[in-house]
Amino acid sequence: MLTFEQKQAIIEGFTELTKKEISLKRVNYHFEGSLYEKTVVVEKLHPNGNGFVFVGDLLSYEKEANDKGLVNIRDYSEEALRAIITASIAYLSEDFNDEPIIEAWVNKMGTELELVYENRSWNVYHNDNLEEAFGTRDAAAEYLLEEGFKLAK
Image (cartoon, rainbow, N blue to C red; front, side, top):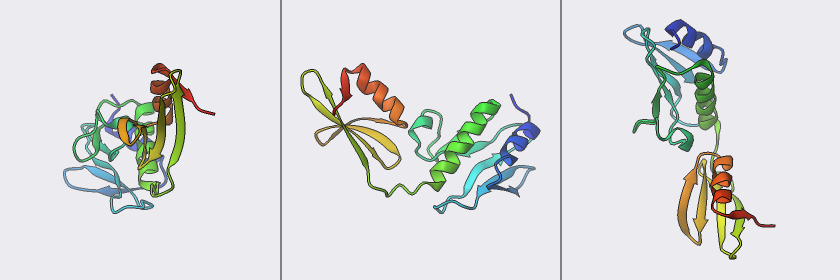
């Protein structure tokens, strides 16, 4: 487990974050460039090593996140801490009102599914029905390939 000081050094390596001391010797790190009202990336980092990173509704962290979109980083490695902070900053930087990306996938029997990137996730649709949702395109493509689908030409 990383110490408080080690976590602070890693977090402070993200120059886009601003440190703000709060009560009980805890600190928050804000991302002032956030496109949203939410600016806190690292929340309540405590000298005992406990703390949280905001990931919102990122599917790649859905199993770890609480109902407020926070992930406890107490036992995170340096690599995992860097990755989650990078994901949080990207999440708060992304304007997800862009046009969706749509890909057609087909299996040997001619069944067609659509892989659609919308609202920060990769969703698999059969007709208008949502079948699965993934945090990354790679995870969605892996699922489709395992199910016997390939990208239509």
